[in-house]
Image (cartoon, rainbow, N blue to C red; front, side, top):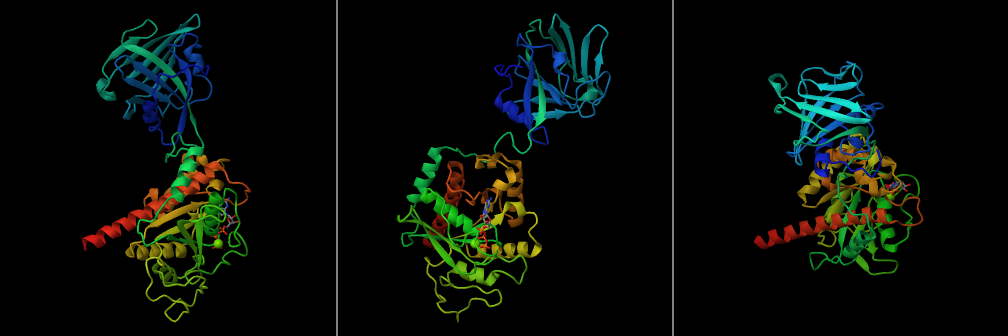
Length: 450
Ligand SMILES: Nc1nc2c(ncn2[C@@H]2O[C@H](COP(=O)(O)OP(=O)(O)OP(=O)(O)O)[C@@H](O)[C@H]2O)c(=O)[nH]1
Ligand SMILES: [Mg+2]
């Protein structure tokens, strides 16, 4: 069928129709009755299935049938279903009878879906004539009234008939699960809103975001990625990807600047020792909480077996609002989300519960998504089924809604930044700052009320 032929199926109905399939699918138009140059209908039904036949009635109703394989003489198709589709809903119905195709000796083809939907086609001089009949019949319970249409004879009740091939779409979903505009304009808008962002509380020039996660998850790389976006070229900090895994053991705060040598933005990203994959290893829950509350001095070297306490040099006994952590970012590797061991999951859940008690917002950053969706450009992350599944798994792991999980790709091997990746990183920064603003706003309102 030529590309210029446009289906009668509008986008809303297509969207509803696609929902009838458990797996993501795409529809390819193979035949359209009102297109004069169409090849005959039965000919189009050969080859690889599955197929759907869609009948458009002048009343606005759209009905049809699905066949899981190309029809063969008198052969049953166990997976056949009938459907009704509106702009807001699609209903699937099973014909209780076996669906069968009857090929008559006089070269007319009958496609029967139980008694509910019958389609007889006759091809004369390479042109197909149709006779369509719908019947509810008590046994079939489709709710369809008994109706018959002779299609090519210009029956008043009939508008069009189309045949589609249904194909799987692999990793790419027919509709993205999060909307974002991947333009240069969006990148500039996000950058501008970040540069001009002012913390809601006047006494606070910068908010502190703590990155918590297992070793190799991409904590240092995220700090690096945010700096790279602002510097408009990839930057490399000694802590990112360098040394043996888990070598980073200090509390290190990085003020993000608007550019190289530029003024500070309102964001400070704080790194600490990685969370251990065994209970006794890595950053302890008590040390993590001490950092969140603002007790731990900059540069403090963590030790798994000795917690930071009031005897630690530089320990802040009465931390102020500027010493505290204003948001915790759990950094997790999308490739490992289903294989993180029980000890790590337990630590994350324990931290979450205690951090919630401190009224500090928490967000999940899901890294390495570029290695899941095999897409060259990260603008496909929100159309990737694999990424969506991992976002869902991450949300389940931390018992948070999916909207709190932000997929990113950190700059790792590239020398230059690029628009889509910058947008993904800047949108994560935007979400962080918004979550902090909302929490501070809420805290200010409650303290005023008290
Ligand atoms: N492809 C890809 N590689 C990444 C991504 N994030 C990090 N990496 C790579 O993963 C490795 C580990 O990243 P780091 O940023 O050092 O991890 P970390 O969480 O800081 O680990 P520790 O400092 O050991 O706690 C490095 O080689 C990074 O280049 C990502 O989103 N995509
Ligand atoms: Mg690191």
